[in-house]
Length: 362
Image (cartoon, rainbow, N blue to C red):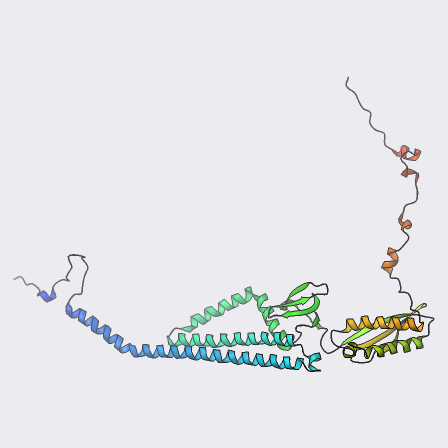
């Protein structure tokens, strides 16, 4: 006996137009829709909670970053106002360089703002990923490997940056300072986290990477020393010469603008060299930082005029070995006259080789 299945259990229906397979039955379609709605209803609370957490994290991070950056900016502006106010005082004009303080504070503020933004936004990003239940272990491991690779590849850049940060924090030098960086010497015109710009004595601008600086000689901090050596003839009255030089230094310390640049009286130290014809009198004075060269030139000028007015003769400058060699008799390097120098002389003709005969064509 043949048995046929009921229409409800028939094979899947096929559309004549497209030939695609549709739902097996209306009950299965209803069941799938019900399951999807139930899954959404069961998880929408978790989604909403996660979305609110992410929004709250982002808002807190943005607000905290704005507040911290604004606080740092206000602090830097306050430091600049303090330096500008001290610049107009009598003592502050000598000890405070407003441009130096401004650039140093701006560099420190830039570093602090960058560090604050990196820490806050990086922490917020990691927190958002943890809310989304993303495994951070592979991500952190990859970031660590990438950081090591970048560190090896850009080690010079990292060295320059770290050296610049510590240099600014320790206030080793600033704008307007006269420094000796080993590779170059000049006046600092700009201080950066990676490069320092110097203006050399001939006007050239030197760009020095902070990581290449191994030593720094700051000639503008504290005080400087102006040293002058005066060559006096050995037959002159040295006590009178000392008195004349001392009087010239006192007159200079009372004149403008040297009264501000000289911090101590001009001192005659004594004789540094004694020879048969000359003696060297050493003169020293403590000056403002960076003003020693100008004080030395003016002091030489005044000492020369004072000694001339007192009738004290200066000794001629000793001739160095290089100058003595340059001024030697040029005839000493000329060869003596020789008969071989004249091509028509018998000696020259006797040493002239005989030319080979010219053979003609037969």
